[in-house]
Length: 55
Image 1: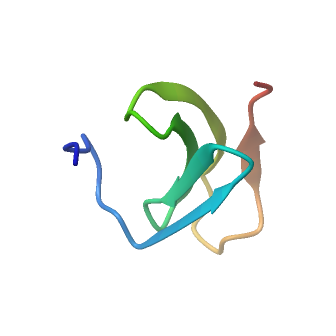
Image 2 (image 1 turned 30 degrees about the vertical axis):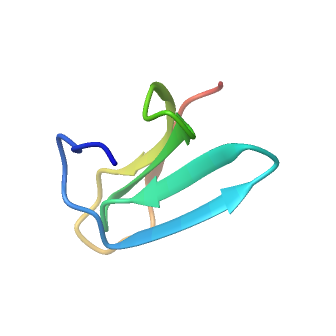
């Protein structure tokens, strides 16, 4: 168990990684709770413009 610094609206796992959604962003974590990267962040008012980040 670990604590997040953001809201959690969804969680999934794939090949040893956790993917956690905050509703406006998607984060990639290790199974031990280490943040790997932010995959994207929605910066628009209408959910159409995403700020993408590479891992």
